[in-house]
Amino acid sequence: MKTINVSIITVNYNNAKLTLDFVKSLIMYFPSAFSYEVIVIDNASTETLSLNLKEELNSLDHPIVFYKSNQNLGFGGGNMLGNQLAVGQYLAFINNDVIITEDCFTPLIQFLEANTDVGVCSPQQLNIENKPVIGFDYFQGFRKELFGRSFIEKFVKNHPKRKELPYTKPFEVPAIQGCFMFFNAEKFAEIGGFDTNLFLYFEEFDLCYRLKHKGYKSVLVPTSCFKHLVSATIRPNPLIKQELMISRLYTYKKHYPYIKYKLLQCIILIKLSIETLFNKRKAKLFWIVFQGAPLKYSLKQLQKLNLK
Image (cartoon, rainbow, N blue to C red; front, side):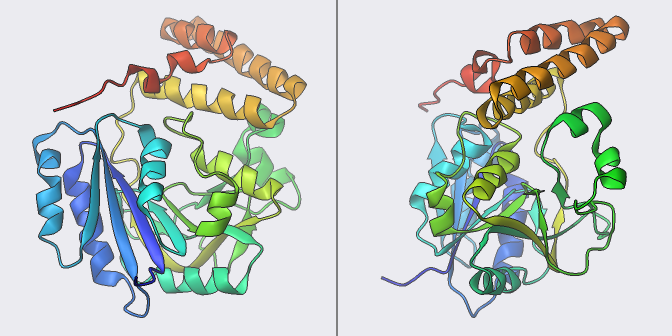
């Protein structure tokens, strides 16, 4: 059996055109020095073009592994399904709203080979105008909840600066961007992969936090770039904002001591109570956070089997 160097996994949900554009760009720029497979997981899409996605992918110049789930598994769940099919030494989890514009895989492979203490890395992200944008985030905690990212950026020592663009050399970050995550497959397996309780959001926080506690670094490698169309697959709405909060509280409770989790919950409740005075629609979100944002309110619980 031929050795596969890189397994590239992407998830499609009612955005087949984006997926096709991504895969075409990937085939165009993937380096010939390495072998690769492309795995497309369809999360029970219903749009017409997505229903024909398998046939469209089969017409491309590289064989594609396509699997259609009969239920929307969310971002982490879809990627974990793809991971079950993957055989590569490296795993690249890439959003389908990404466009590959150059060989960004050779630098990542070489970097992980040379730095065995790194668990995950990512190239420099560009926006639609080909300008470099912030490519990492800080872990959530008291400083970020109370004062925001700008406070950490300006006043907290020994933290990388998000806005010092363009980045010029690889550097360790708390959490890389979730739209392009490149792992050594063994290290990804060691931490157990994606937590599928997270339906949307905070996946990179959770993964990088677990890697850190295993002694592995998360690193941004800006020697190559990719273009990100920025959340082209998700339309903001109250349910999406609710899901963001559920994922946020879930990761707090999972990773932090109970007292710290409760204090962070109280900070969020105070902010939401003030917001509710000016926007009554925030009352539902306040009530959900008051209960601890249980997973019963997650969009994951609303997904139905599609057996057609």
